[in-house]
Image (cartoon, rainbow, N blue to C red; front, side):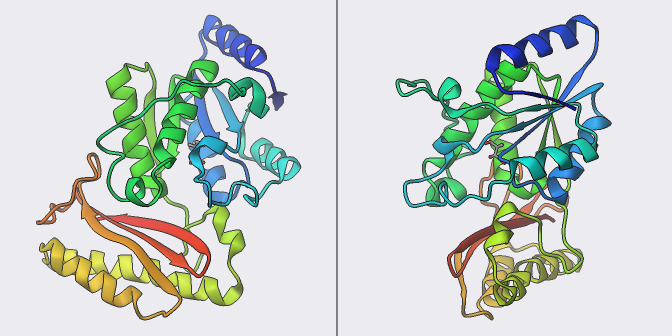
Length: 280
Ligand code: PAF
């Protein structure tokens, strides 16, 4: 695996790869890689000839009181994992060439990004769409892989790609879970054993909601109420949102449409913000 740390080096690689008739499959990450990221890299290897992983902790997607400073960093470990999962190239840009002090161009998706995460993290999607658009211009992928765990991010990126005519196919990777059901996330590293135990309530809740839908329940209000009730079982959980939404638009649904509905949950487990979802 080769590493590239400048924009011109990465763009040259992209141009040469394309000129050689090879396709580029891209996995953007913020590092602190876990098995979920590795599954996305393995999926990328099935989608293109050359797999590129970027590692960049994007400051523009963190709010002023969020965890940018303490976000887990392990570049050597990350590179070893990328190599092991089958990446051919890692792009590790420095902050200043990507976001110099006079940087002033942002991309804002104004519909899908508005509810849920958009309410509780107002700066988040503007930062994500801006950096992903920049990375697409640098890496020039044919295919880019995003995890289903960040369902709203996936939907916002799809909308941006469609609205701005990026010639990139967006492929969703399934959520990877630990054996006990907890969705893998770099932020799980913040959890103590007991907080982690409490966080399992999210997955239990989502499974219970899916069972209710499979048994015929269609009223979103009823399902949201049940999920809220189940989550409230653990006093340390503070609910940020529980919603039944259309997975493409993130608009709230009143009636569940099996195959086209998503139950999305965000909570605080003490100081750690966790999200998860299930397709209903
Ligand atoms: O999902 C992430 O890790 C980030 O939001 C992304 C897509 C790499 C943009 O910084």
